Length: 224
Image (cartoon, rainbow, N blue to C red; front, top):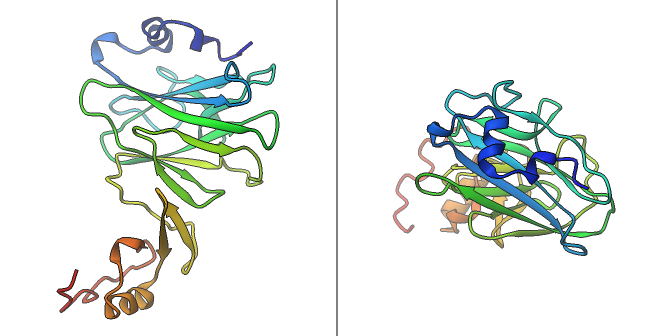
């Protein structure tokens, strides 16, 4: 039985319990993780767009995560050590949120998908898998992964919401590579970027978070 009991309630009742105003037309991002060996074993977490809400626990809106039992996975947003089943945040600007997933057995395959209940255009959501150094757009597609192998104390995943595909790679080292929807991206510094420009290389396959001075890097370059 899933101890995230509010998942069993209709959405409107769920919002009332969580303290949301039904008149506010609050956008909901629901993330669902499913054990592919037994699709009855699943869990959900909610991210809601609430003006002025913080990334951490807001007593008027948020709910702590109650961990599941019976072989069910757990999914939650994570902030400053807190695990949240419902997390109201302000998505008026691009946002990166930590996403925790726990599973009872290492090696099992899981599906992570996104369901959006919004009153305007859907949000662009990229999933960062820090274990595999990959990014994937999950706005309209599910992500499949094998649980296990991540030993860091922080969650394995980050959610990049409405970042307009601008991905930061500050946590990676210069010279590292990571994948974005199957494309290999190189983490560069100014020296490496100048070399790529001089060789008329592919500037769509670089991440420039470590480049603090872009002055004159593209000066005179007309080939791209």
